Structure formats: C-alpha cells, structure tokens
Image 1 (cartoon, rainbow, N blue to C red):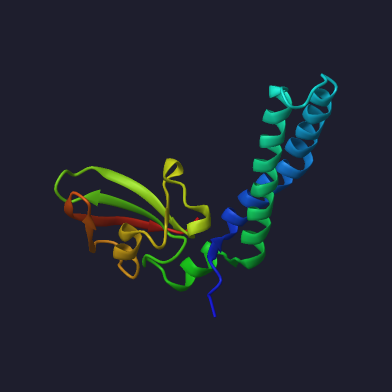
Image 2: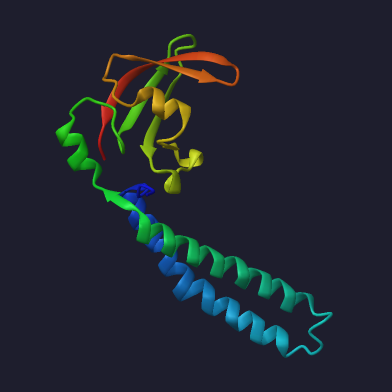
Length: 161
C-alpha cells in the first residue's frame, strides 16, 4: 500500500486556486480559441487551431493531475505540527540556514513533493537537504551530501507558517 503524499494546508489552497482558475478561466478561453480557429476554414493547415488544441490538451492534463494530487494528498496544518514540535525541523517548517563555510543564509520551507518550487524557496521533503534537516533543532548543523561535495548548514531559526 502506498502512503498518501503530504501537502501543506497553504499548498492545498494554492493548488485548489490553480484548479479553479484552469476550470473557470483558462478552459473557456481555450474552447473559444478553438471555435474561432475553426471558423478560419481548413483545419489541416490551421496553425491557430492546432495551437489551441495543444493548449487544451495541456490544460486538461493539468486539471487531471491537480484533481488526482488533491484527492490523494494528506493535508497537514503546519501550525498544528509546529506547535507539537517547537523549535524542531518537521514537515512544513520554514528553516533559516547559514552555510558554515561561506556564512551565506537562505530560507526554505519543507513541503510535499507535489508543491515543491525552488523559485519560491519551497523544497521537497524527499530532497537531500530537507532529509538532512528533519528532526534537527535551532543551533544544530545539518550535513548535506551535495553534487559538489559535502556542505554544512547551521539551522539558525525554525518557524511554522
């Protein structure tokens, strides 16, 4: 039996908002674009029609993916988990790290694989850096085996948002 993938409460809200937008805004626009392109005649050589159909295929695929992810996910309220584990790095925690060697600081939130997005500093719980931090506390050092070698990060602060 497979386990249900974890998803933060905020992450589930973001995914539900994207699903709603795809269904109520994007899908009708694409249907309209297909109808408009059909009016231009021969569909074999109609680039607008083929582009709109491709867009529709992507949109419908994303809708199915989001519905599936949301139905299978175990939604976890980060505030509740954090309150039960104060100061400890757990799923959903936002962790401020300082690289021991360079002194550079970075902040990550540990989230489920479904909602991971490095552009927004959300890293998957399955990632090497997240696995190295889980269970540690403020002041601890997490040792991460990175492609460029071993890196050490001091956990400066742990919050639950």
